[in-house]
Length: 289
Image 1 (cartoon, one colour):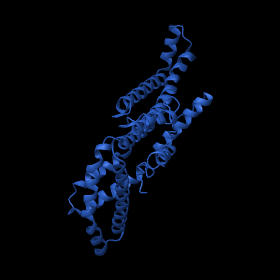
Image 2 (cartoon, one colour):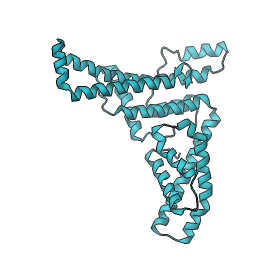
Image 3 (cartoon, one colour):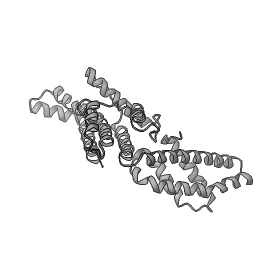
């Protein structure tokens, strides 16, 4: 998807390809170290220099991953501020206040959320909490990039898979902002919070019933089931197009899909699916407020 001058699909594909190449190089260098030594000797190359070159690819990946996030957010701002604007005064003001060659947004997950709140959409919130382990890995990369830029010290040790997963998720959140209305986004946030709270409440009742079955509690649960299933189905139908294939929310959307077509007469199955969705939401740190 294009956001201003930024092709998210192409750039993510480039980033994933770079990561794939780095994994292959690092793996081969680790598994076939003797062969690399022989190659260096046969070609009159200093082995340490060869190893240093291989390490450079990983440092470049660090820079590329950071640059992706920075350019994604820069282009979001330009997209929103320039969208359908032919007013030369507005364009001059934008270029003066946030010139392309100097605008450098802080892309730490929490700071990024706060920037969007303060400067674009006051009620905006990321769907996933910053307590998610993947998000912590992403933030570590951002911090490592700053350290590397200022001191030349490379320290990132986490798996880039988690970082790229977060960047894919952030991309989908940004694409929704760029190509949908403010009202659409805020309605999505409200519905997400309502769904999470509804699932949590119903899962607590199911858990209580499993420990101490009684007819009153069973009736209370069943009175809520149709509304619960219909709400889950509507939510899944409306938003799966935005988050299909996004690893950070894949468990939740899979659980929603399973519940959407569940026969309510099959008590054990629906109870299990309620608990499964609740657990998926918790594991994936989907926010309820």
